[in-house]
Image 1 (cartoon, helix red, strand yellow):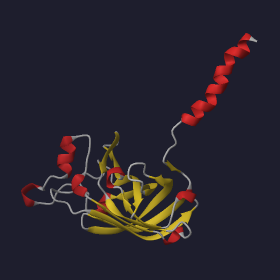
Image 2 (cartoon, helix red, strand yellow):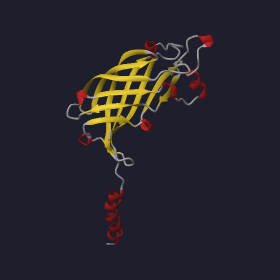
Image 3 (cartoon, helix red, strand yellow):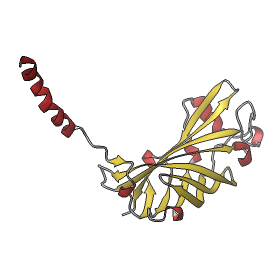
Image 4 (cartoon, helix red, strand yellow):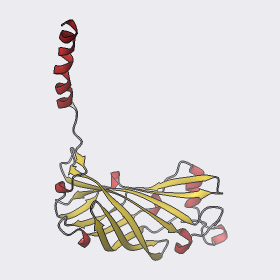
Length: 209
């Protein structure tokens, strides 16, 4: 009897703890997605990149402040259109020296090793979407360093709901791809620094008011 009496407070506490647990604003529930035009949330949209350094390990950096739009109808996901602009000049790495090298001018007026001091924004514009459940292959034209090439993104729906601060309907996606930097005219130190660049994209879109 004494054990039962001691356990009673715990039995009552469990439902109270469950009720007080905070609910995430966004969940992987496609029923929450509504049709319309969405704008990126630049503060929470990141394009990560990763390259192999001398075959020893990988090095990675980030592009932020991406802007653009998503036109989406959950009843017809294959008709979705994506248009994203990425400010290459805002590239960030953990090394000030490397970041400086990425944005350094070429020697004696020659070609820059990477992006140079005033790089144009990169841009991705979708040309087709093939959706299957909560995933999709998004084919589009990527313009980088003045060169435009087709790229395929493997995208996954990651959540939808209302932003608790601005109350806007929000949808989120993760996407990955691998591109050849030499195809965009950035071939410095290939293959010591890998030609393959792995892209890891995390993007939030807020519904336009």
